[in-house]
Amino acid sequence: LEDPTMTGEGQQSPHVDLRPYADARTAAADVTEHAARSPYLRSLNGDWRMRLFDRPEEVTAGFPAAGFDASGWPTVRVPHTWQSDLIDHPMFRNIPEEIWPDSPPLVPHDVNPTGAYLRTFDVPADWAGGRVFLRFEGVTSGYLVWVNGGYVGYDQGGYTPAEFDVTERLRPGRNTLAVQVHRWGSGSYLEDVDQWRYSGIFRDVWLYRTGQTWLRDAHLSTDLDADYRDATLTARVAVARVATAPPGSYQVRGTLRERSGRTVATMTGRVDLSPADTGAEVTLTAPVTAPARWSAEQPDLYALVIELISPAGRVVHTTAQPVGFREVEVRDRQLLVNGDRILIKGTNRAETDPDTGRHQTRDRQREDVFAMKRLHLNAVRTSHYPSDPYLYDLADRYGIAR
Image (tube, rainbow, N blue to C red; front, side, top):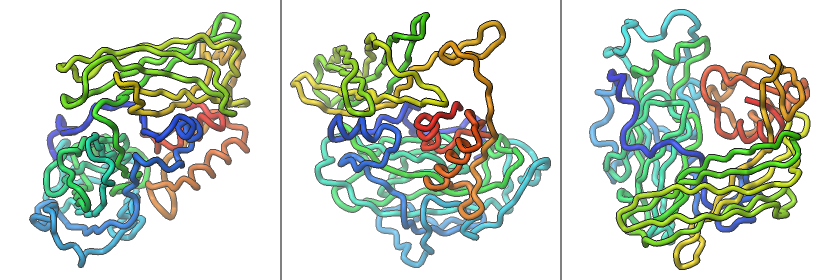
C-alpha cells in the first residue's frame, strides 16, 4: 500500500472492451447499450458478504480460502460505496488531505478502513476449454483479489478497469471470489480533489469467456476526404493466443453496419499464428461512400462487427464497436468538426450521487446525459477521473464530446 511503484499485479494489459457475443446481429444491436444477454458474459453484481475492519492487519485470517464461512457477515449490494451504505463515515475535502499524517506515500497505520468481500458464483459447464477473465470497472482504493483461495492480483488504478485471467483458478460448479479493499494507499494522494471521498467496489464486476484464441484489442479510425464526403475506415486489430490453441492462419473479418442492420462495408485480413506465437496484429481498411457524419446535433453511429475465424472456418469470437465518422481539425485558430466551426458548450461532471455515492446507476447516468441535451450542451469534462464506461456509450449515442 505504501509502494507508489506497485500500481498493479497479475493484470491483463489495458484494452478496449471487446465483449463476446453469440452472433453478429446481437453484437451490432448491443454496441452502445451493453444490455443484451450473451452466453459468454456473467455479471457478478448483486449480493456480496462484506465486513469492514479498522486496519488491514485486523482482517480475519484466511477469509479468502475456499470454504470460509462468512454466513455471519453482513450483506451488501455491489456496486456500492461504504459511505453511502453508512458502513464508513463520509468525508469532504477540497484543500487539506484526508490522510493524516499527510506524508506521501505513507498511509495511516492506526486506522485504515479495510473491506473484506466474498461472493460465490457458478461457471457454466460449456465455458470449459476457453479462457475466463474477471473484470472490475472501478474499485477504490487499492485492492487484492483471490479466486478459490488462490491469489490472482492487485490493482491501485481505482477509476480505470482492471482485468485478470482467472482460468487456471476456476473449477467446475461453485467458485469463491474474495476481494480486500483498502480505503487508503499511496495512490490516494493523487485523488486529492475537491469532492466527497468514497470507498468500495463502486462499478460493475463481471466475467467473460473467450476461446483459446481471441480478439484482444482494436483501434478504429475514420478519415474523411477533403470534401468531408467519403471516408476510409481503418481497424487495427490485435489477436491473442495461448499455447494450447490450434496454430495456423486465422481470418479477421470486419463488417460495418448501419443502425437498420444494412451492411455498408466489409473488410478482411489474416494473421498467421505459429505454435510459439502468443498473438499478432492485422490492419483492416475499407472505403465508405458518403457515410452519415457524426456530430452533436446528429450523432449518427454505425456498428463495426469484428469476427475471428479459425483455420477450420469456425467463428470463435464475435464482438462489435461503435463507429462515428467525424473529422476534428483546428484551422485558422478555429475548431472545426466535419469542416464546420463549432462552439464548445460543456459542463464539469463528477460521479457523485446523493443516494449511492460514487456509484451511479445507469438510470442516473441517462438522466445526466438527457439533462445536458435539454440544456443544449455538447461536451462534458469528466472531472477529475475517467467516468463509468457506460457514460461514454451514452455520449456517443446522444451527441456529447468528451
